[in-house]
Amino acid sequence: MANLYSWNFMEVWVDPMQSPPYLLMLLGDGSGNCQIIDPAERYKLVKLCQSYDQAQLWLLEDEYEPLEGRLSEAELS
Image (tube, rainbow, N blue to C red; front, side, top):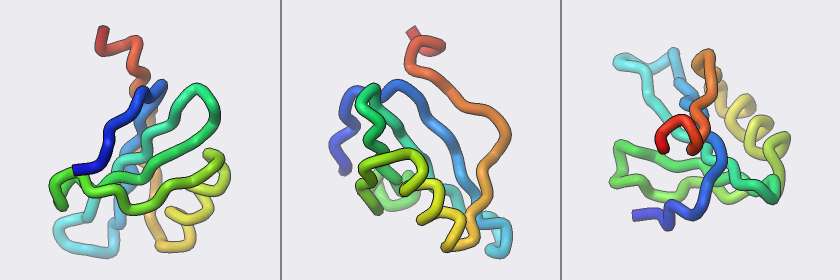
C-alpha cells in the first residue's frame, strides 16, 4: 500500500478506452508534490511527481481524462 501522506486535494482520472473504465487517483500536497495511486492495486504508488503539471502530463500521455471536480482534505474533516 502506498504511503498516503498528508494531502490537500484528490482528483480521479479515468481511462475511458477500457471497459470498464480504469481509475487512478491523483493526490497533491501543500508543497506541490503529487502522487498517482492505483486503488485497484491496493493503493499502490504508480508515479511520484514534483508538480501537478508533471502528474497531469503523465496521465494525459497515457490517455487518462480527469473526472470533473476535486476533493479537498478539508471537505472530509
